[in-house]
Length: 127
Image (cartoon, rainbow, N blue to C red; front, side, top):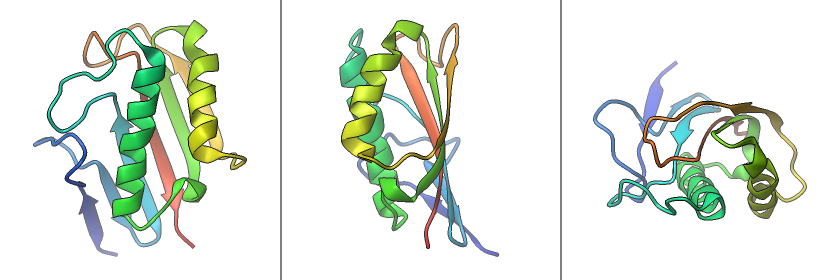
């Protein structure tokens, strides 16, 4: 089955990985962080701004792959502050509405950049 690399122009470019890989009707989305195509960090110190950017980036990747948030079946969220979970959930609800994919939340000591407060990866299935 052919694999398609998904790298929308509005998301941060990387020479090391694809923003997503689409295989058949499945989309494997790389960890999305609070970056845009021109800035190393969006919303430094602000979990709500970072969560909004993470979900915005994920939406761009889903759209480029022919999917929406309703197609997400599994997501994993990494955060450095467990106290931020409630704020992340509030932002998540704006993007997912009543859709409830399987999900895991993990608290980690640090992410790839010291100013990142969260990262999220997902799997989507298009019917």
